Structures are given as structure tokens and as C-alpha cells.
Image (cartoon, rainbow, N blue to C red; front, side, top):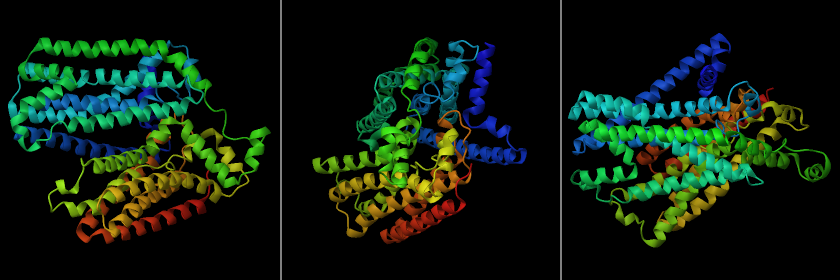
Length: 529
């Protein structure tokens, strides 16, 4: 038990970079912790208000008894999705695997500590979603002491089954991909397939209930649909609403049994799967020796560095998913619009006449949102890690090194946006100004994300990471790019709604100017050891 507690402590302290912050400069640590506290408070406030608002809306339309069902379902699945995206890098393919496995602790303790950290993340999502919703339900419908106890237990138990499913899916992806020559590429493809399947599944499910105006009359039907999606949520609801301890006991048993079974599975596969993934990792970046060196000499330094960045992106699944999923979703949305328009399933005539003109004005900003939160550069300098000496000693200028990183981001963005914008332009009846904005606004958002991400990461790189997850998911530049991108898009939507499409083109030009200035500033400061 003691090894498990120590390993879990390390995992939790490293979950958001807390351990590094505590051992950093005291003044800097205070500033970082104060900023983190403000961000956490803002996220908790927003999530709680949103959850309570949705629950209050269900109560107002006569679906009070559906609140616990929706809360358990959404809270558990949201946490499982977050854990699934983090599994690669926590359970599999983490940098310090050899060091951890050399410790005098059993494999079961290592696995349990890492699954427990994933559970902690899922539980956090569950608390943010379920507690406010349960509070609204209790105040609106009243709840017995048994119901309160079931609420508290459901918060703890609900994440287990979806988390188990997420871990099993991640194990299967890692196990299957480890059999391929290019294991990391296989991980990316399989993870993308699973993510897109979930996206399409949610849209298909939402499309089953078209009569939203009569939602209050369809309360029983809606509850039945949600119960069919995730029966354990219905069992938990029976305990909360009706005090049915038999069904709640079934809910608890299923969740605990699933967690135990998955733990046993991961313990069995942890070492062989990680060994296969480690053996398939690329050994280094590029070489100037032998045949590969001859091939590299025929290229320019800038192109060679771009190839290096692309190989790193393809060899790091969590990096690709975090930095490029926005562009994938833009392509998927464009294809969906084109197919819907061609088949007659999607038509602007279905919208109220007052809303139709806003489609052309706001559609570019919808695409820009996904581009603004997707940046391959926000962690690109930090990801050099212990191999940064190659970047620092290469006989090329900082402009070449940093420019290659930006060029990779923009190369991906331009190709995805060109295809997406053309598909949407030919599928929807847009005027010339809206078509121009459809190209310009998302591209400007991509430039802003790429150049700001590079400037922030190059200014204060974090090379001492032990898992790629740290710079890719927890890095300050990544968080800053996402926040700035969201503010930019919300501001753009507001200004465009008030002033028209022409204003969006002006904002795109301003964003491009800021991007160029940020890039020049990064080049001027150069590279930091």
C-alpha cells in the first residue's frame, strides 16, 4: 500500500505541474499558484453555473426527474472522455517508463497509481457537473435522506464504468498499434477514428429528437432514451428519486466490477504493450551520416527542419490530437455540410428568415474557433526536451528553426482550410464577401495561434518534462493560446453581428498583423537553452 500511496502522490502532484511549481523560485511559485487558483475558480464557477442552468431548464419544462439521470450520464461520460485523451502518456508511452519499472515496487502498484490519477480527473469532472445539478433537483423536487446518500455515492461511483470503457479502448488502441511498424501513426489513426465515431454518434443521437418544442410532453420518452444509452444511470436515478436501494446496489456493483476487471486487464498488458511501444519509438530525430545524411544534404535546412517537426508530430499521438484535432473537425464539418446540402438534409430555407443572413457572417468564425485553439507551435520548443542541443548548435539561424515550426502549423492549416472553405462555399448560397471571410478569418485565426504559441513557448520553454503530456496539455503557452483564441472568436462574432461581414475581414487583418509582430519578436529574442 505504501508504494501505491507514494506513486499516487507523485502522479497527483504532477497532474497540473504542482510539484515543479512548489520547488521553483518562491516568488514565481506564489504568482503561478495565485494565477492557477484564479483560473480554477473561474472554471469551477462557469461549469457550476452552466450545469445548474441546464438543470433549472429541465425543471422548468417539467423534466425534474430527468435531472439526476442527465447529471450522472453527462458527468461520468465527460470525465471518461478527458481520461481517454490522457491515457496515452499516463498508462502507455510515458517517457520515464524504464525508470518507473526499475523501482522496487510491484507492477500492480504502478498501474493502480496511474489509473487512480485518471479516476481523479474523471471525478473532478463529475463533481463539477453533478453537484450543481443535484442541488437544483433537491431544491425543486425534494429528496429523502436515502436520496442524498445515493447522490453522494453516485458522484464517486458514476465515473468508474465509463472510465473503464475509456481505458479498455485506449488499451486496445495501444495494443493494436504496437503491432504495426509505425505504431504511433496507428495510435493517431485509431484515436481519431474513435473520436470521430463519438462525434457522429452524438449528432445521430441528437437527431432522434426533432420535436424540441414539445419536449415537456415527451419527458417519459426522453428519460427512456437516456436510460437506454447508459442503463446504470437509470439505476442510480431510481435510488436518488425513488429510494430504490436494489437498483442502486446494481449500479454500484456494475461500476465496481468494471473497475476491478479493467485493473486486472491493464496489469496483465501494461508491461508487454509498453515494451512494444518503446521498441517502436524512433531513435533520435535526423542524422547527417550514411544514406539518410546524403538524403538530408540534398534538402535545404528549412525543409529538413520542417520534416523533423512533421515526424515529431506523427510520432507523438497526444501532440497530434491536441494540436490538430481542430483542423480535423473543420474538415469533418465541411464534408457534413457538403453532404447535407447535396442530399437536401441541410438547407438555409429551414431556418427562420431573420436568422438566415447570419449564417454567412458567423460561419467563418465557427471555423476560426477550431483553428484558434489548435496550435502545433505552443509546445514545439519545449518538446525539444533533452535533445534541444541539436536545435541550439545547428548551423542555422533562429529564424530558420522557429520559422520551420510555424511553417508546419500553417501548412496543415492552409490545406485543411482550403478544402473546407471550398466545400462550404459551393454548398451554401453565400455572397462574395462571406466567401472571402470564409477563407480569411480562419486563416488569420490559425496564424494567431501559430505565432502566439511559438512566441510564448520560445520565451519560456520547459525542457524538463517526463511525459509529453506536460508541455502538450499542461503548458502555459497551450492554455494561453486557447484562451486568447476563444476571446478572439467571441469578439469577432459580436463585432460581425453588429457591423457586418466587412468588420470580420478587418479583424482578420489585425490578427495577421499581431501574428507577424509576435513572430518577429520571437525571432529577435532567439532560442533559449
